[in-house]
Amino acid sequence: MAVAHGVGLASRPVLAPAMDRRGRRAVLRVGSVLHVLAAGLYLTVSTLGPWVVTVRALHGLAMALLFSAYFTVAADLVPATRRTEGLSLFGVSGILPVGLGPWVGDVVLGAGGFEELFGLSAGLAVLSAIFALAIPETAPPRRASERPSMVQTLRRPRLRPLWMVGVIFAAGLSAYFTFLKTFVGTLGLTDIGTFFMPYALTAVGLRLLFGWVPDRFGPRRALFPAMAVFLAGMVVLAGARSEAALALAGVLCGIGHGYTFPILSALIVSRTPDAERGAAVTLFTALFDAGPLVAAPLLGLLADARGHAAMYVVMAGVGAAGVLAFALLDRERDDARGAESQRA
Image (cartoon, rainbow, N blue to C red; front, side):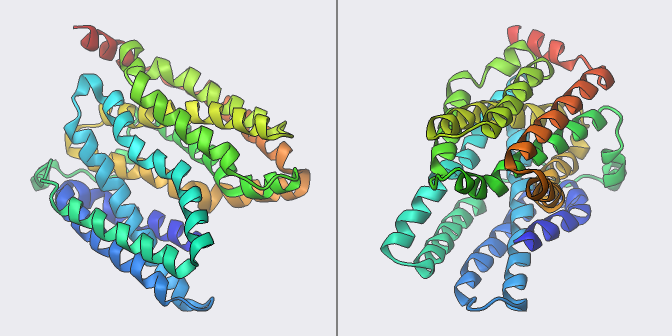
């Protein structure tokens, strides 16, 4: 399972500059073809071994290409004064499967088996590719003089505090996406949908009804309460002993995710020159491959040593320290300008 994230992370040094040099559409096309191929190849896997690793590697490359390209296209299209709201609404397409995916998977597996499940996945990949081919180019290739390196984008002082918060956020997502199933098992519960359905519905509802809030008050200012609620959800999850507590944790984490991801995305885009937008978004999406690959094993060791509850409490504490460090290190005030532009 980790191979996909490893390949996705390793591909970013090539993908980041390609997004700005070759354009978004070329990356979308290649990623869509690889996605269809990888989804179909799962039907050929019958045993553990080199072949399933190869398929996972191909799938990881496809996900890296598509995740980066789609969010870069969205950032190109939304108005600057409503960037957080626009990215929030686009991100609904990624959150809905979090709630629907486990339910659909259970239904398909109950009626058929894994062949039917992977067949459905391949069909959806084909449908996605058809729509992707119709997306026009949103940013033409740049001249050689306008092509800074990925390292230059990564080292920009205005972006460094955002990378730090992004790492913490990605690690927090890994804490429950990776370990919630085993955690609820220790509680004598079996349905992870008790957490993920409220999580997804809350995040989607928040974005549809209140996605304008960060742009109105300033994305940077809104980041602090968003991360605070996200981390509070971790604490509630640590103390959960019933389905009601799991649902409450899902709501809190859903609020945090519903705002934090688009806020970070919008801030990174706003602080990056247009010629580096593709590279910046690609580096940001790389954090969500690094989370499962790097943070999850460390969190797993902690869970084995001290228990899942302690793991979630420690993750919340580390996150709180990181947000405090961000407040001390980041001196940008672009949120105020954004709020003024929105009011104008």
